Figure 1 (tube, rainbow, N blue to C red):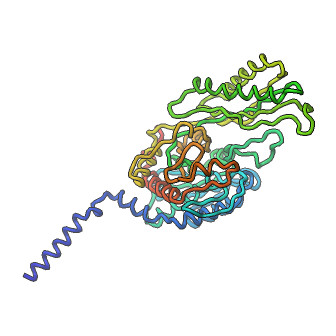
Figure 2 (tube, rainbow, N blue to C red):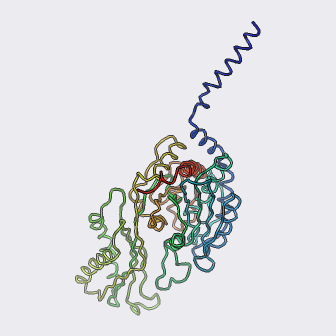
Figure 3 (tube, rainbow, N blue to C red):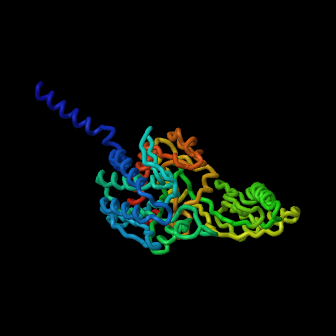
Length: 442
């Protein structure tokens, strides 16, 4: 009887092991669980603190590039630097796979606007220079790769993390000259021009963990209005209103299923503050968001037509000139692209529900995706943080922070970053263990 009891216990143990629900999960699901368990919240905060403490205003990106390079080396990545111009290197980290798999790039820009801000962690949020746009992506990229490694997962394909200079929307014009104003994708363009390629790309711009499959392009125009010395400012205001009113016709003409093109008066500069009428010219800077494939010259001519109507009816206006000083095309990819499907699956794995797609107005916020996609690399945007047109449900303070005039008090939710790192890690395991032929563009 005693022997039979022992035999029964052993049999029960065997049955328990055999029917253990966890052991019966698909190998891929168990691998994902192991990776997710390795994502380190404290390490993400530490990395975020470090990148925020490094000032990397557009044109001054060298220090952060070298810091990121040192972190990539700790992951065993091959690190290289591209000197876009003196003191402005891109940094490229490559984790080599075992071979035969697809290559995934994580890309983020290192530059930010010059908004002084102390690095602070409070109320489950972290505040600091450039974190929202978009240095918060780097801790997520780095911790995603680290989690994969700590879980012992081998990848067939390569992972690239690229930090690029000069993405912030800036352009040289008038008195705004020098490397501080050489932005709008100069680093990403240089990176792609010089052979850093991948099968697909994830860009961690702030979307509140919504998925975006393209973005609008842009055309920046300077509209110069010469007027009579006594009323030239008021005359220019009428041109500004006419251009803003043109947005309605513009949006009716340029329709898209998920992008919303917009028109905005970005700045006005005119006259002299010390003597009215000594320079009776007003320069108005117009920002037009465009659908992919829209010729910049077509936008210039439409603005000219709007201005000409005002000039003809306003006797105080003597002349109007329209000059373009920056243009970037938009792009879009299909939801059938593998990078989209991988991100949909990864988000659902982490959150248990489908990924939300970005609203149409969010597509007006440009990114380096346009530069990268132009080389046949399908690119999506999905990242921590928030912007003017989106709020993650966990970001309860986002709207109030964004509405501050200086933009200084804008933070990123730590839980937001942790979840983002998890999604990146799951997507990377998926993509990099697929054969290249399986993810190739058709």
